[in-house]
Image (tube, rainbow, N blue to C red; front, top):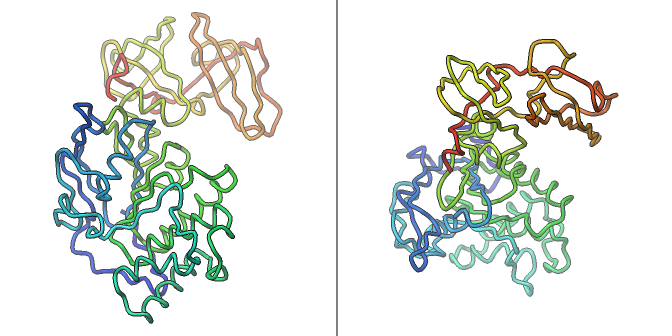
Length: 367
């Protein structure tokens, strides 16, 4: 777990009795016999940024809404700081929520929008002023306190929504695709803002997105979901480097996936060429090699024999499409900005470190 950052003035840290802030145990949801979420269990550490990532219909938003208390589970339990909250209404769960559509009150000023959760909790007026000022300073909107939401940009409105979600110092902040309604430039800016805010607050955040880049940038851990189940839960680096299934490998980043026969640390590809791996396996498997791990050399050097078919220069990176004599397609990625080292129709060798050759279950095993 990363060390808790120093808190800004106005946001004190509560003493930690346990490392686990949120735990779901066998949580499930069905609609008319159709599973929106199969029974899942996971624990979120205090101060952690956990992202629920996956395609549409994977169950990530259903899971978030049940934790928020906005959807009733069909089974399982939700514990916050060790207390069972499954049957408690949303307003008793000490959770802040940030939605994609901001959900601001259009007739209230920025200050009054942020103050609303504190007023509902009947906090003293002086405390409300102090905490609202601290929250607006945190999101860098102090000078905009008297404006109405319609007088702000989309990014500023989303920052108001975040300030409102954290101003009462909730145990957990839930964020449901908060950047989905913004254009790319604003999304890129707010990703960095959310990362900064998490570090400054040390808050426990559960974040829903279908954007893999967003998840990789923001998360301490990613819970990758598919078909209403957890496909893999791990750090961004581990999910990328050591996926447990073809789905995980293909969802996160680009990939070369090849069929092979494994024996004694060697992999015989469908065209008869051999690759070495550090993974223990035998029999029919699938092999993952990330494009940036392929190293191109002169024909005849150790590695797979291949011919360059296409070179696409995207400025920052260069994509090289290759085909082996036996017809296997490969894609390599290199940094751009210099003259290409290969041209179409060049014959090359393709080398890869055995540690970067990841064996997956045959037939896309795992979800």
